[in-house]
Image 1: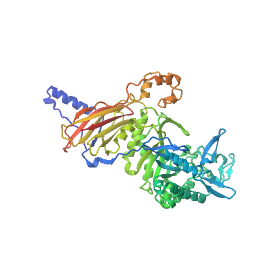
Image 2: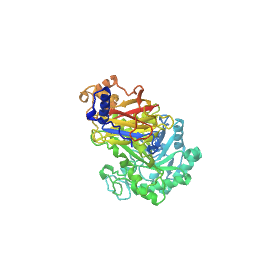
Image 3: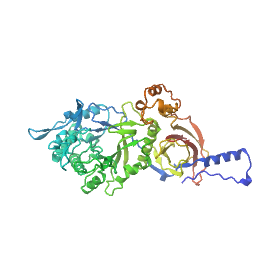
Amino acid sequence: MIQPYKTTIRPTAFIYTPLCILICLFTFSLLSAQVTLSTDFTDPSKATSKLHNVWTVANRISPTKGVNVANTMSVNVVRMVGGITKMVNGKRVPNYAYDPCRYDSISNTYIYNWKPLFSRIDKIKRSNTKIHQIVLDQPCWAFQHGYHFLPDDTPYNGTDFKESERISIYGNSLPPKDKKAYAKFVKAMLKALVKNYGKKQVLKWRFRVGSEIETPDHWRGTKEDFISYFAITEKAIRAVLPDAKIGVHTRTPDFLFKAGKVKNYKGEAFASFASSLINYCYDHKVRYDFWGISDYVIVNDSRPLQISAKYDELFAPLVTHPKWQAHTILDVMEYASVTSIKGRNYMKVSTTHSEIIDLAFSHMFYTHNAKGLDQIYRWGMRKRSKNTGALLELHKMVGKTRYKTIQQGIPATKSNTVKVLFAKHDTSNGFDALLYSFNDNDLNEKPEESVRLQMGTHFPVGSQLKYRKALYSKSQNKFQSFLESNPNYKSIWLKPKYDKRGDPIKILNTAGKAAWKAYNHKTPYAFSKWKTITTVARQDNKAGSLISLETQLPSFSYEKYEFKP
């Protein structure tokens, strides 16, 4: 462990000289830091894995005309095998145009037509976008054949769905009535894909079974219905492509829909399927290659953020399950930081909280990389989109080796969390420190945290290195700076009942939008000029030297340091 740099002054021998004054000031500076974050770039045991880009996948729902996705990203395409809806005279009805399967009631057979599926895939390929994952979620409408639907005003009988469940907001959310027919369809589809695109290409695509399956509008069946559905689908795909990558998308392992008040047709609450699915797959030798979780972080004063507990909430119950398949890749397949969410509509966060949450999520993925954490899927990210702010700084660190952090001391505000991501280039001797601060329980501003950074290096004592830094806090956030430019913003610019951290286009009134459009932000995020820092002696008697510096870190902010010889 790198020890804090210490200076001892004997009072009986104190002489007021410039050197003594300098020593006294240096000593006070060291004592003023509440938290010390350190690593040792000379210690191989502190080196972990290389940082990878966890933000390379964009989500798209049921595309029919290709996808508008940033060139650096691949795409996860949802509802690609039919079962979708359209609006006719204000009413949601089945859209059969994109179903590759229909039921012929005259011949009592299922008839396949792969043209709609191929057309959609071809348009995505012509968009110069790689398909990362094809989602098999809403089954074709043909697989509702054989169901009898109860009138909505009658009780469930434990066998049938109700008329209102025939069509959900997402489309067909019912299990296939004829499971053998559905398995036959999946096999035929995989064979058609291989024939049309080649085995090598199809093996590059992952196949996800379901979307947030414990949500009624995604899946009206029971837990047992889904487990059977997943097993049938997995077996059918592997009958054609044994090495295909197949997985699932659930809610969090402790999920309970609307406090258990909504029941399925057997009178059961919609709750997590995770543990039962893990058990079944282990016991029946059904393989899943990846597992996805959704997480929309609510950023308003109604609930705590609990970012520090996210790994334990999302993934720990899966990977610690005694029957968990250890090779499994873990992704967050739907993610956003929002001030509110209702159904399919949500309000994005425009304050620094969004950047810090993105950064904390990324850091969690790096810290638990060995457990299989891989990607975070985003909405949006159009052709002209690019990473900015914290994600840009992270992107610049991709390929560098992450080093473990040693933390000493506690923040001045005990409920604050202060962290740092240390990374070193393997060949250039350059290294970075990206530190950030957040509070799990309170979104409001707290006093700055005094932080000391220490890094052990191979350089001899007295070596001079160049470094630069950039701070992102409320002053560098244009919207927060705009609001703080007028202490009366709540009464003159904000619409009633909207959270001040939301999208300015949606939460500002007419006067606010006009002021926002005219606002000149004078403190944008920017790096300092390159400065020089001199290394000092280590206190652990190891060879090399120590870089030690202090900084003040505001609430919900990050600061990036870049060092080079």
